[in-house]
Image (cartoon, rainbow, N blue to C red):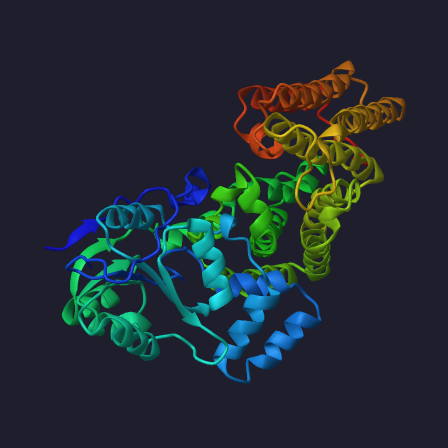
Length: 508
């Protein structure tokens, strides 16, 4: 009877780092083999929720090694894998393993069965993973000459153990020939068609199915909760007091969609380039790509689709250059500039400001220098909050360490907090000067207008206090969207503007 494991558990926390299996015992010639024979386990997509070849290619980086690897694609597949396995070293401790399969393998090991890692990956990769796990008795892998996949894998197992004398654990259609040669089979997160075909050619004893839906993984990888930042495109309409301009709202809506699509494409690029560092992070290791819930090839395929959609929508509202600038700046940040201390937070602040510029272009309402100056200081403060929050959380876990690919150390906390608080007060000074300018120019004589200054300063100071106390939820904008006090401040700002004057506030 086939056992089925289908708990639909949250695989995003699947990092094996919670448990390190006990070391395997070498097989002694002449020892009694359990009646079901050894368990032969596939690697990519089965034991690990990713493709180690893709991981190795990413580890090569954008250099001559990658170019050489691409040239080897025109030759034997095994030679290509050998080069990637040798040059693109991956850390087996950071790979997203399948915990349910590992638990079952430990049970089989306790029953005296031998565990064989049999994979089409290069032998160097297989040995590194086997050494890390310490449960496998033998390895069968590609060796630079033979690509140990499909029929070749089946032939190697038949030669070593005999047809029908082993259990094979796999996940894909390429494994059908191996299941056909095995006595029994186990499927791991295999498509329904593959499970059905495997059932016809082998006696399935176990079906492990714990991968979340692809659609849900894609949605999470796009980070829709970050889209709240793109609401900044509507600010020019509000500051211009053009709330009844329907064409402006339509243009801003298209610009909002353009930024959402482009930003999601950039987030995917960022997650792909940061796979290793994200897996080391206590929170980011739950992201779909880092955890293996979303495959890297699918993530790569989604990037041009999302970026293309963003550019098309930007062009539709006459703001293509804004989206192009946003994408270029974001790519520079994701691929390199995020590693430069202080440069990264200034880039983040600029990306916020670009959203305002995009809103101005899409609606036709030009941004004033007052608004640009105020927003630049405020956004710099918000960007620094993100870094301070990361460093504070890291400092609790590992004092004196640094954030991977960020260039900051936990000893930088105090000075970054000072920078951020200064930026907050600077934004309030600009806001106060603007209010003074309005009153002096008699655009409005109401004393109520001064109320926006303490409200904005109070809100930013509260964000910093929340961060220092360790209650900030990674991103200040996301935090504010769920914070009751922030909403009350927003209501206070709207009320203050209403009370201040019925006349437009010129130039903000």
